[in-house]
Image (cartoon, rainbow, N blue to C red; front, side, top):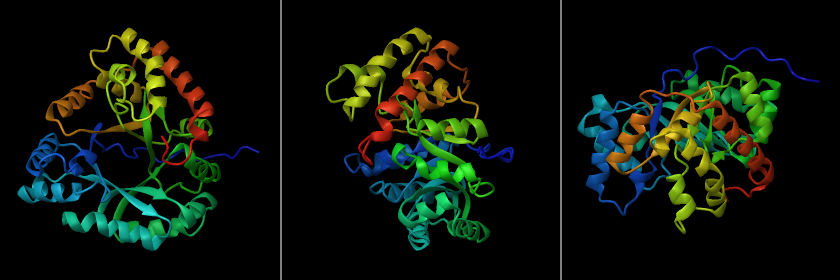
Length: 309
């Protein structure tokens, strides 16, 4: 029997910047530390939200140096927090905020496994724990991280309505080459109008480079998908791959922001230019990509081993 849902509260995550600066490259110690601080300042100057984690090398150290130079310009941030117990969750919150000298998490990206994932799916104690963290002011809002191999957890929870009033949205890879929510979960998110934060704006690089340059694609599935998507990009009239990707993501009305990482100021400018005025892709091209992603999900994504994509 289908479950009826109340509509999600209006206005969730509407305060996000359309582009969110992903800080993974700030943790790359092959890049001089001073250059990374300069890059952080450039993103701060843009006034966008940041996405970060204590797992990203020494990115938090870079951010601390940038923030200490001008605390008034420190951005609002999404932090990755988890994992299998509320004790681990609280520990990862501390590991993220203490190095930065901040006292709370603006948005916590819930990366759940083990016991916590089970409680999330079944409506268990974790929801009270999340409310307590929010009441304490330690985490202001929560979004749920999704991968193809974890989609069953939020799917089960959403069908029962457990996340209502606690989870403000869902975050996963969403770009022309990747849609890391299973078809069932994707359809339910669409049906409910759940807010989405689209990760990995350009899927790791320009589509022609991913298609044509040996080794440019992290995994061969990306190269294969680039072969299928490149002709659509060429027909779109877009002036750049970032523009194409941004227009694709925001072709879904519930997408609130796209998260992209870079260590190069010119790439940051390309992202910022792409979100200034966002027009949807031509309907036939958008529909073609949607169809490809549905096929890819069934053929590949939901069968993938964790972290293999």
